[in-house]
Amino acid sequence: MQEWLTQFQLIVDSLEQARERPGDNDEQRSYFSGKKQQHTFKSQIVTLPAGKDIVDAVAGAKGPTSDISLFRERQSKFASGQGFDGDKAYVGAENVQTPHKKPRGKELTPQQKAQNKEFSSTRRIFIEHVIRLARIFRIAKERFRLHPNTYEQIILTVCGLVRFRLGMIVFPVTIKN
Image (cartoon, rainbow, N blue to C red; front, side, top):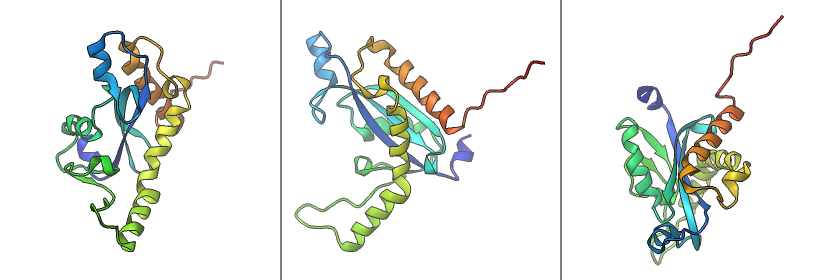
């Protein structure tokens, strides 16, 4: 499977979902995301080009976990030469193409801006569409109110439902006479 995936440039992105505030003070600190200003779970999705299928999903990481560290933990599951497309959160990761980042105190050239726009609109937009498909389910969109231990199972089930919706999972149909 890893060899077959190497012919594609996979797309990776992360998302955060609010959760109930943990009661334990140390635990609540470990889940507090400064970006969202609330307690969150972080998930990461890897898809085929054009969002045709979900290749890998990670769910249940603590909110402040950076996208790149979550990616580096899972990158060993793929072949060493596997290419990825990511957003600016993945700058510096191995084998990941990212948009140009604005240099400190300077501006991007018009050519770099055009390249960023082309990169976003023709390659990376598909992961955002897959994330939207996952967020259609209320359990993956709103604050997670269930027991935190069930989060990973539920999000992976939602990813399975998204794969079914995309047509990647087909159940055999038997017709009874």
